[in-house]
Image (cartoon, rainbow, N blue to C red; front, side, top):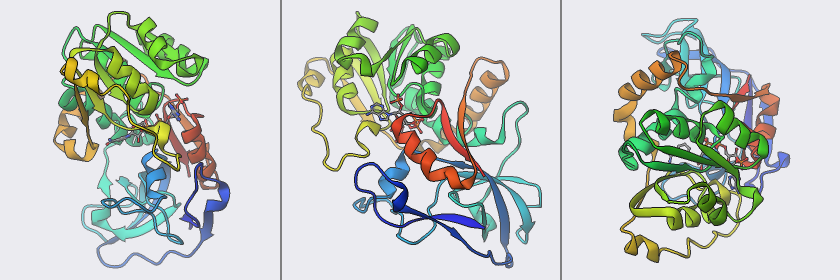
Length: 331
Ligand code: NDP
């Protein structure tokens, strides 16, 4: 089996030399254990934080050890109750071709017709639930509101925009980093409008897209986008702070929004959230999003890196914006 180790903590943008692909023999599964061969690995922006060393409340990657991350795979051998060869499972044992671990490390999945197994890492998985929880539990989106989503062509953003529309938003505006992505948002995903944030000042571009302001902001990006959204939010508006990817490779934290005073004047609510705290929504999410998928009301794309050897390149590509939709690696 092969697995990726963190060899050095990246400084700024990660480079190939920060990682090492290691070959090794897996032990036979012991009593209560399972051998799983991964078929898809998830690449997610939060992994960049785990490559650093200064997260007091998160288990950062250890040097010289296999990195973890979402993965779907098939059970090859099982000595655990409830899991049999051929079962499709989800685990946090990504960045490797196969793993031997206790049965409790794996969640059994039921295949859904018409969607690839990788969807359990994207539209039907953690990113999908993040979009759903952020709009419902956190931003408390109501019908008739105008919503702005940043990072809109990514895994979370592309779903947040579509779900906002399905929940009755009056207009959904998206921002992304290329003309191709902007076209995808409007032509394929049905966003009301979208802009390329590299075309000018976000504040100006957003004002042009939403001349009467917005009620909800779904933030994947932070930085200049957050400041612009605070400016565009109408009285009583709410922002769900999901991520701040514009700063993940920064060596020094960027200054916060300069217009926090607007929170007071306009009685705004900015609320950060972790998807893990919204697990209670999972059944409703699975029902509702599963139905929308089956009815063709939600569309999704994936950007697929081929082979475990391409995982690092795909991860760097994710932070560079090379993905449309969810970034995964086919093992
Ligand atoms: P994406 O699929 O959106 O991939 C990351 C994207 O970030 C890239 O495609 C790129 O798109 C964009 N990006 C990179 N640099 C910048 C920049 N300087 N300014 C604006 N955009 C940039 O990733 P996910 O959908 O998986 O995650 C989206 C966000 O949600 C991340 O911030 C992530 O950390 C967060 N998240 C938070 C969770 C939670 O529980 N709170 C759970 C899951 C995700 P582009 O070409 O448009 O620049």
